[in-house]
Image 1 (tube, rainbow, N blue to C red):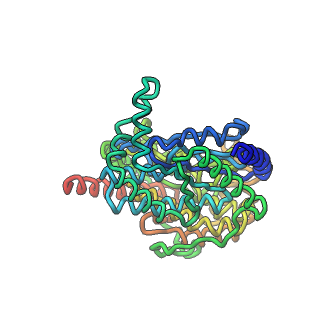
Image 2 (cartoon, rainbow, N blue to C red):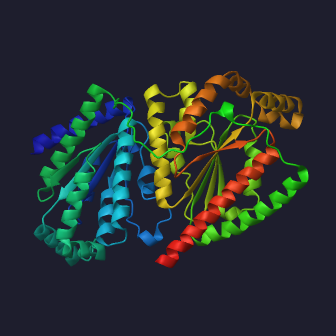
Image 3 (cartoon, one colour):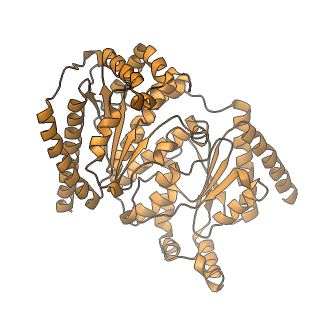
Length: 482
């Protein structure tokens, strides 16, 4: 056994170096019974790895009443950069099984989370991640003995929680739950059950599996399968060329409507905070269409402690080194808060598509991935609003020229803006496809006519107010039913 372990560790060190050079990220999920030895297994796996290139994360199983973010948030925000390894000491399996066993979530919610796990794992696989899922298994008698041993020692007694003792009492229910979860979540990444009764054997098996996963990727390359497509219920959207851009509003009516709508939005902000309703507002649109001014009118009446505006520029190196949705997962609001995105994840199917920053398979895959991401947000209870701020080419040219000729506005115009303008037809094609494929019933697109900026601001505010009023009414209704 000692010779085999040495050979496996040597292979691991060699393969990790090659994986690092190939910029392949690895996520190792270690699940299993309380006292099965998950921490010890991870310790053995990392014992000879360069600590600069791995991380160990232990996401807490947070009670449902204290959750402030979506279910997958602790895991989606922890994914490693290219060429690095993350070891998760328990994760989405433990969270799902424990909460359904405790009746903290409904059976319908459990099924939604299983679907989200499959989506998450598939998206990581499709992005080139190695996802290795290990389950340390021990029988009921062995678990009881190990827990008792830990409790007898004053130095290790703290490691045994009431949750662990409860799991021991409910061993059969947990066993059924684990088996069902593994059966339902093996689509993109299979489960590997290790014999936790034999610690050295379990370590050797884990080392072998990790080596084999890396060797396969180094030989075959990153996953390159066809984009997965699911049929989402979509709302019909017009093509941009069909949109009438003539609507306008007079100055007096604008001032009156602005004051009324901002006042109502301020009231609703207090209600959504109290009702813990998260809100995600997305702004996309043509350069110089008026996104910034529109966002300012939305943000003005909000309590600054309860919202954030996230301007999304070109990704930083540490963002480029992860699956593209990571930088948006890390910017999501807590329950009761509002996040306004100035540019969004839709860059994947617009600028990244047209400028060649991702492959054709990448951007074609993104339509489905984005629909899944937004469904996960609305399943969580978020209000998701998406605005395309629309103008015609003549209006854009006039605004570009005004910026160019006005000293205090010149910072708003760049050579890139002029280059993008030359690609208007290509961008229009991409935007039309985006609107057609991602205007889902749960997260529809709203085209905001912005040749008249004041009209656009009022229209966006009306949509936001109406959506928040509906969300508050529905939440109050659920509370009364409950």
